[in-house]
Length: 305
Image (cartoon, rainbow, N blue to C red; front, side, top):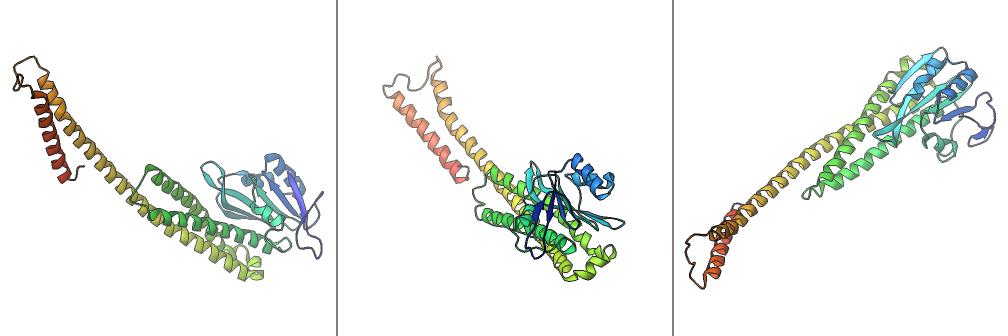
């Protein structure tokens, strides 16, 4: 549903109001088509221009129509299984500052609850601060994954299939991150030609934002290379360990087949050596032990055991 927030004069944060007023912040969390229809009636925006705000796979981009600017962005989130980023749309109109998320989110609530500190009035600077917060969350999550990867590098001797699964998951997360960071960085690199007024007023903040996206993208790319190298090393070690296990089991099978063969021979109803000796059993056991120990020594020398 639509919620309206207004910042009174000399106030340091926004408070929820019952009805929209000029210059207020309109936020739609867990948005639906009904919410977009209400927003279309409130702002006069075409519904077809708003429907992409519900696309959970929307690519970051900018759309401009008349005096309205729509930013489609993504931020780190794990609300949906298999999807590690969520869509957020920021709409700048002459009268309202609008944010739309198809999921429940904590990003906008950080600003609305005052957890981010003092925030500016609605407008370009507030939008840039939200995008800067997104860049910071990307950077923070990438660092967290980096620490996890560095910890895994110290324990490569004992590789399990779960270790490879964790690396594969981290790689998928970073792939989704970089697929968001690339268009976000490109969007702001080419922004001056589409948003000249914004760049004139807040050029320093825009430059900081662009650098933040570039750094997050570079960190993500470097970490992806590290993960791929580590995953390849994991797979080699895992395969090598599996080969060692197979060789050990093969050796044990051969060694244990010796008693079986001897016992099978002496189980035949034919004339056999030592059949009349009172010490036949002990001699046969000693023979089996000798052959088994000899086989074990040979396989141990070949590093099969």
